[in-house]
Length: 215
Image (cartoon, helix red, strand yellow):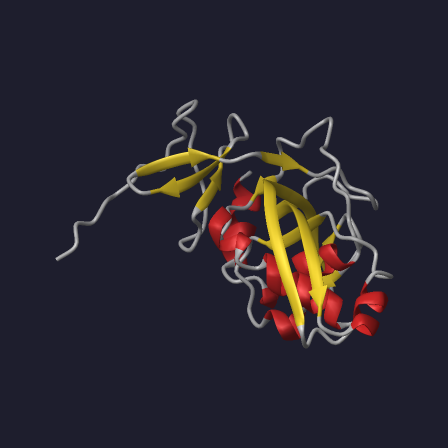
């Protein structure tokens, strides 16, 4: 039988508690604010920031994780007409990948995909928000990288048929952002674009809500 490793959910940097849901693989330390990703029998630090709200964001909200991956890419087409049309597409510098586990993202919507398509540029919060809950992340950095090419292909395909496209992608940076959200009557509204997704879309949202009550 494979050996089972049990990790204490304590930040290796400061000893603070690491809270999260059962499917999480990255945990935000509530004390020092550094995300810690499970790596074998221990943790590895990841770059993490809380995003400053763009639209009004009342106190007492919470943060959901979104990976931001800085990318460079080249497109080679068999069809010169498609190549010419593709050059009209504004380049994408950051690909965003939703860190929360989502029920049926194709139906409910995928915040990371929307942020990528809108060319969102997140800025770090200067004041921070120690009162808010920062949810753990169900996708590792390597898991997030697997979404980069599909996200780019989806966006390009909406303008130009990607048949015959040879897409080469390089990821040079990865940041785990805490994106501010607030629960409202019609669902969860982000404070970057002001978009809403149903609470039912986020797997284990009940744990986030419970943490919000305890925070």
